[in-house]
Length: 312
Image 1 (spheres, rainbow, N blue to C red):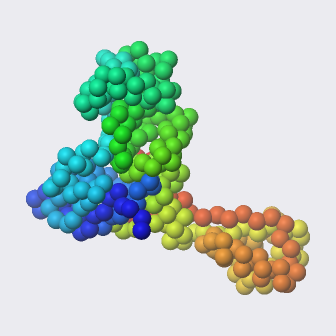
Image 2 (cartoon, rainbow, N blue to C red; image 1 turned 120 degrees about the horizontal axis):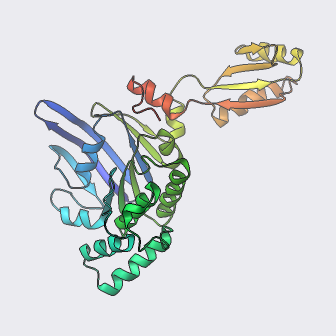
Image 3 (spheres, helix red, strand yellow; image 1 turned 90 degrees about the vertical axis):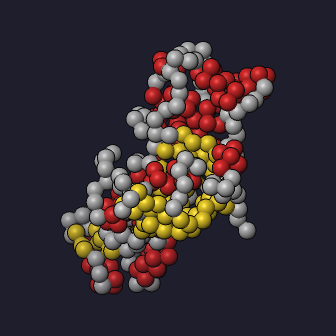
């Protein structure tokens, strides 16, 4: 049986008459990346605050790293790390000093603290900048240092809130690689992000939160297949084969000039295989084929009924 890093049932939170979380259920297996998406005000931040012991839930049951955040908050805090949207780096201190400060807060001995700091500076490619003020770091370097500071306590579960906001594409992909390496080492990542491509690239499972309710959950591919608009584009060598394919399939939009036939499809492997077998049995050769499925932006827009904000 898979061990769970997070298990929440019927999670509820209100502020006065405003219901922020309306009975949500979450399960996050250990050693995976789980991404929580949703429009502004959906309840993402509140969910993270409850799971990381910052605020109590009004109802429901929660287990984080095997502990109840309300009854055993110190045990939960000892097992988790939180890297917020806004860096916790002290810009007046050097990178090394920031890490040594975190080591002191975790009650590591001086020798263990220096060893840990050196290890993390090397891991996050910050050795050359270790003794420079963090305020002189680029945005990507500050985000790497921020995550390195989170790792001083060897957390089993890390909450990453908007980890690549403001980073250039190269720095963003560098951060993605670091996250993948953490998970390969057995760490669990709970990710909130406005970059839907980020969730698509990283997450094992994605949940979509809207108005305090979970309205969809699954892998990125499962969510995309719930949205209409997917299709397969078939290209043929001549107009005769194009016409034969259109009649054989009984559906699709033909483009005689491009010699293509666009057929509605969910893009699944089984569906594609059945379509090709159907044509092959009728000796209709396909010169080229491409599969088009909706992306997470389409999922977001369709299921929440609004444009993602901010548009990235």
